[in-house]
Length: 400
Image (cartoon, rainbow, N blue to C red; front, side, top):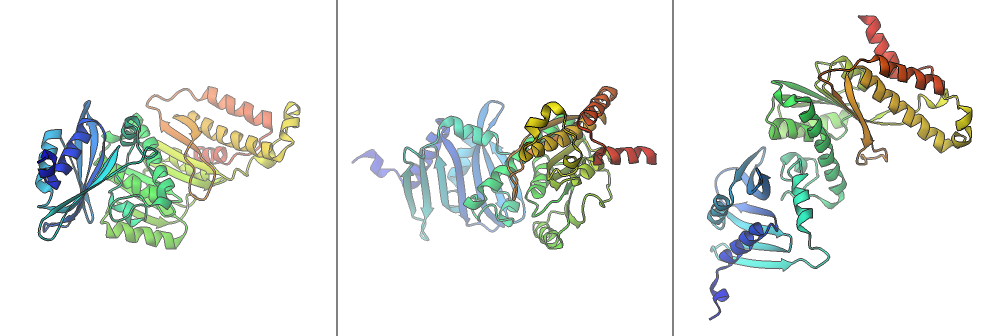
């Protein structure tokens, strides 16, 4: 008799899993249909590189919280073998080459099935490792399901794939800024998100600061629309996120309370200036803005004669006004002790604007006089008489 014929379905499944890990082809293992008495919904297992060694990350998904454990290869395989059929009735394995399922009947009989990925669907090893390396939010997080990004199995809903990419890109940018500013050393943090909307990114920041980093962080979402404020507060309450709250209001009237991270994405026109001013005034270590609707400077522009043939076209004039507006914002931030980057960010919901201004507070600020001279030269060159951020900053100085 062929030896393969006597291998049990469970052993066959474990062999495929073990080989995929050894050959760096393992993507994800999902254990569902829990048989125990705890409020455990599923376990998601993925590879993770720690100190140049591939380990297995176990994410225990409960109804309101998650617990993460990293295990060495041998220890992890032993635990998986113990869980199959005794604690979980269903296992779904994804590798770079195939998808496998192991299920157990009511009588405990194991059933194995496998589907080889067609050539067009086979992923390269490099792609898989990059995907794991740059995933800053786990798909299994409860808030993603509550907000409709993933389904009950932690799988991203197809129509929400762009939002899923945006969430991860945003947290990637934020994580780099947090590392640069040393915020992980703070005992208490306050994060404010203005114009939070349905709060995909607000919840993601709560997950990153409170779960991933384990910090004592208070997250506040500020939104004008009361229906969204109520919706987000209800979701936060159901998930028992006591450090996350939402308030009705806008950036111009919000009373700042020692903000460490100030976020204002898709703030229209001068609302971005009010947000930046608040961040500077409260001494925020990180300021993140994605401005749009640049209306203030365009009517003020006096076209230099040499640029007139180019800026006679409305679209070019609008782009010039936008570039000038955000350049001045970046320079004002530099003059107030920040290191500033202006770069292309992934497109936001309901808009094609994808520029981000990221400012991190310098530990050793530069002399602002040179930057202020550059601001004056730009204003003179374009005939700018008024810039909201400059006015707000001057009012703060006058109030001292």
